[in-house]
Image 1 (cartoon, rainbow, N blue to C red):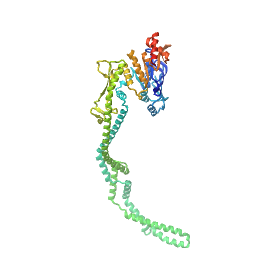
Image 2 (cartoon, helix red, strand yellow):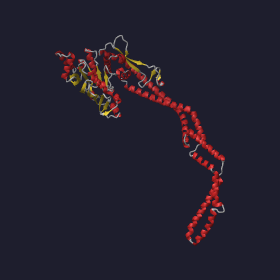
Image 3 (cartoon, rainbow, N blue to C red):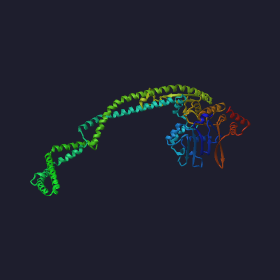
Length: 575
């Protein structure tokens, strides 16, 4: 068996504690076909129920062993593929080559999940669990009961995974193109509704001819105009004091300057003082001249004051409408001009986006048509091969169909709805498997009418036809042999063996013909000690396997004939 599975991801170890009637069980599982047997009621299915928690199913306190506070299930998977390691790494859980998953169900309600020793949310397990473990049994929510999974199974059978990924990318490109086009259209429509308002605002602000700092300048001018008479009188008064009056400082200091110059002729130490005085006289003369010029220029003008006040009132009105300052209003004006400019740009951009969308739409529909044609061909082939497979599994009158349906509801995005067909990232096809186990009965949706045993055998047939490394590493089959025996049981076992050549299989069985094909055989036994029930699980040696299969053949009393038959079955596995 082996080489192919040696490097494949697989379940290496399983530990179950205080789960239902199991106090503690440790299983070291093998590659290939792992078979679990035991008497009815011993608790074989409990092991699969425990693994259901690892697959991401919700935990219930009902599974906790009586008198215990919590139950736990712990598994070790090794040889992780890159995609699972990357998912775990992106979620913050380092996983190079293996992952240890532990789930604890507590009566207190504080259920916990650990990934490689670190607490993890359930959504991480829900994402990776189905990639690690897939359960097919009578009491599980199985893949075949979900019609949305049927299209994926058909694609795998037809080897259309690459085409399906290409379809998905084409659809994403189309959706992105559609979203961008609509965003620009919505923005343009909004701008068109606002265009008149924007133009009015732009014209109003253009007429205003605002300048940075204008308000401060106007307030200063208003203050001068309001106090012009006071300013005029004060300047004239200063001019008289300095220069014009008979007792003006300039005249008096000029006279004293001549006197001081004479004194400096006597003592040269006074010359610096003369220079200071003469410099002061020049400055006082200039000050008097400036006061005269200012007084000549200033005058009270009521019209000028009114004009300034009107301009300030206009600025206040614009500030209430557009911003808290002239500078902010100027920024708003620039934004309005840019919006009007982008309106023209958006109109020209729409034409390019519409072409891009049309191209993306055509590419997506071409991809959908292509993959749909391939699916239609594959569906006919899958029907023939599935009917042939299930006939060998004890359902000789089975009718199996792959039906393509068309949804008649309107699509969320009308351009993706053409000719009664809705385009999705999976293409234009909606697929559902139909099934009829009895002659004369019309096929009906498989999800509604298949029994657990039928469902397990249908999945087994599919697995024999559809083998892919991208699916779950470990497949768990419960009651796959329900209602079959003899030659059909042997065929079922060989189908399991065929699937196990590519993926690790763990199967509960009641049939010795299937158990004899095991690569590893485990027996579940129930014991009562001191009034409590205990379930034990152990791996059987070859000698013990013969004894167990003899029990399955002959019942409680194992005859020599049953033992010889069991030995032939086990030995026949290797022949």
